[in-house]
Image 1 (tube, one colour):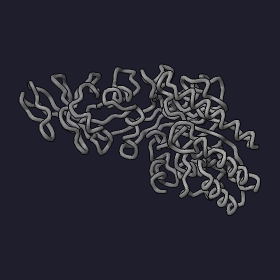
Image 2 (cartoon, one colour; image 1 turned 180 degrees about the horizontal axis):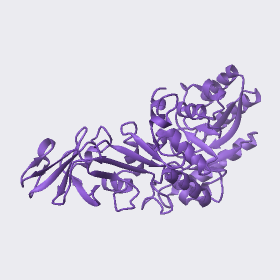
Image 3 (cartoon, helix red, strand yellow; image 1 turned 90 degrees about the vertical axis):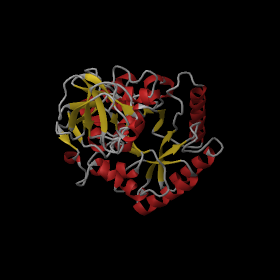
Image 4 (cartoon, one colour; image 1 turned 30 degrees about the horizontal axis):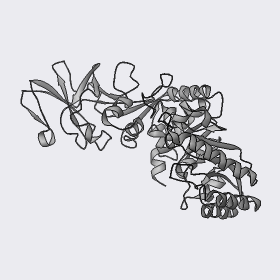
Length: 396
């Protein structure tokens, strides 16, 4: 390699993961959540791969991402799961993008935008059943439902969805899971008694999709699982495959004596004669700075090597030991683990975080190379309006 870092994205893995998730839930429709630039995998190519695998819906956070997908020609239902008063609701309504509301004020704002657009907004009402984030709590839910049904009677919205989000689905037997299911069921019952006739009721996020059939309702919303990632203890099930491999090439290799201090603050000093290699990835590109001096989290020529000293802005130094290595040798930071290389899950376990954070750290910083489904290519080839999917999101 020439040293240039690359994120290799296996679109066939994304396609196969969605197909496997669909089988796992018994054919219940799957909303592939491709938020945050598809967890760093690239919005548009990942969305296409998910649809090829059988996803019936796409979910995003920012409306800019939903609009980019629609402008790219994707015709499936797309919902923005982030209700925001400053979002371009009129553009979304004209593009037939589903919106979320968790307050009466936002319902009225969306209704006003729909009036200007000349067509009703497709609206999902969000209940806060125990996450403490977006949506209406139990005491506020009747007012939200009333506002939405009033707007629906005026021809400004159609209440097409009722939804909520689980806080502890990846913690086995957590008491909040049953409490949230009950609270969501009560919220549905109240809304339907008031006259709501939603197309879909949805609660299950990724870990719930994998382990909690009682949360499925009409639609499941896996996110990280689409990309072969999981927050469950023990990591990803073996029937899902991680889709991202991060690699770079050594840009310098040198032999150094015992007692050589390495990197900022000299937090690493060689205890023997050894070979050091410089890798052009640092915390600017996504390597966590607290990976300083962590052993065995990268692979060179099929063997594990250690980060030697402080992670720099754009570089890390590796202790390569006595085995042969040359400038240009490929270094695997993480991958699916097929050849014993580290995985994003292993990075997460060692650094006390989750695999989602590991893969999304590289978003916009490392070029992506795609294989499978739509054919090999790069970010440039999958651009929307001349920009990569990540750039589209950032430009709005």
